Length: 138
Image 1 (cartoon, one colour):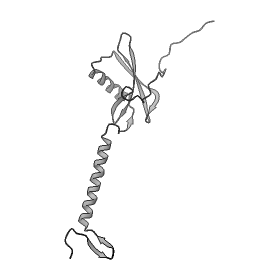
Image 2 (cartoon, rainbow, N blue to C red; image 1 turned 180 degrees about the vertical axis):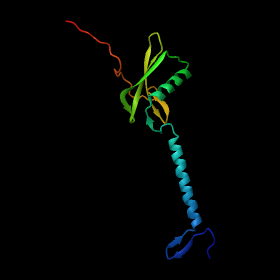
Image 3 (cartoon, helix red, strand yellow; image 1 turned 90 degrees about the horizontal axis):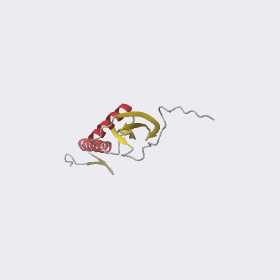
Image 4 (cartoon, helix red, strand yellow; image 1 turned 90 degrees about the vertical axis):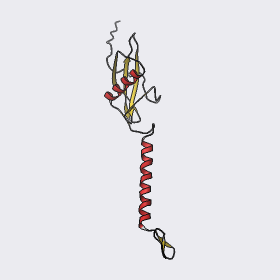
């Protein structure tokens, strides 16, 4: 007295679902899991934080040009600090007249994230690079 697609009773207290329903239920569960993973990885806060000096410099220059800023030069170096496990890259941006601004950044999901976007990115003075020789007499 079983119809196709209905559960059938095989013994006292036990039920057996037809294989097709079990397979469909499994496929639906897998599809939902994939959708959740895609939604989480596509959100703005998700994504691996990495560091790539060349990419950070390129994306920073592109962003400055999008905001109608045309720096004379941009020099980027690791500043010895880290953010979410990635090395922070400090870029000194020369706007002229003399005006050099430090902008620090990392890549989150391959996109530039600067200390202007996320205040938690450490970007204090790092005192790296060339230092003038100071002679004291006396």
